[in-house]
Image (cartoon, rainbow, N blue to C red; front, side, top):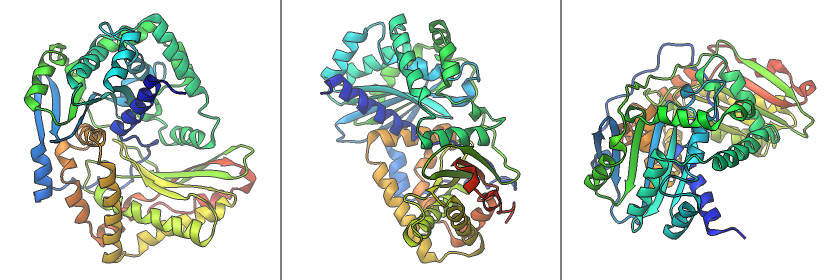
Length: 465
């Protein structure tokens, strides 16, 4: 039977993933003109209402966003560290994740046993997460115990105890987790995709690290890295709940506001570029073939991201219908669009007859490129996407994660408020245009039987087709 603390810890992991809006790996940028700049923010009543809920201020170089949700009985906070994969090298990849993980174990004011007791007593979840563009130390608390939980959160961030025994335990746990990445085909597929898509790119250095890189990290490495990152210019703080922004300001001034400002200046992540379609096959004795192909997608700062969302949703519906429903070639074919600084979309399928499944999926991409969809289909697809979007925004953690994502890699948090207006304004002509611009030069990776794979099927889509 799980202890109360274990239940809280599991909830904390889920919280951190929600904060980060984690997406799998990422890929390339189309070889065409630069994507159009995002249009000026809309001023619909819905967007204006959202904007009014958010208070923005700065404390000694630390940008703070507070979204007030009156009546909410919970409060979430996320301390985001900018940079992600660009903060590490192949030699020390994983140091940021290890630092945050150990920081959630114990701090100077809250040793291990005391912290676990406080988290359990107050129903507080404290965790962390990393992705390619940024990381987060996350807190979820009831409104009643927010003041006490805030003390734990601040001390974990600023004064982690970094005891040798805590470090060794967390490092061992991390190495076990990393060592089984190749044990399941889906996780191994993502690892292979990263090697292909991110060659020569900062994203090649997985922020989670590798067995080799994490295995070499020492406690002194983690302590030194912590000192390096504790600068307000590297941070973003987001708080969502029924809280007074001025109360949050006072709390920040007396805690994070005392840190050195530093001179960190975030730069846009380099966009990726694929010049031709490719396929890489890794042999494994499996009953089915695992396939994923990625193509360039516009970043969140581009106006093209809105028609691309619609195009991806339409492609997802069509490949499901054609591959699973009509042909029964696969149980779970998919089309996806990630949300990263260097962004990508793609297709995924597991199939015994991978050639036929991929041929059908590429044919659906060609349809999007050649045929202009009807206004009714675009309206229905946009509504379906919006329904999923609204459902995903029900929690404070999800809303905090969205604010952070747009602030860090989406051109500013205000763009999150006008997302709906821009999506509703997408036209059929725009969907066709982005399909032609981005859905090409797919980089395929396959796990399965090489003798069953006709590479010509995978690379048959010509650049610019």
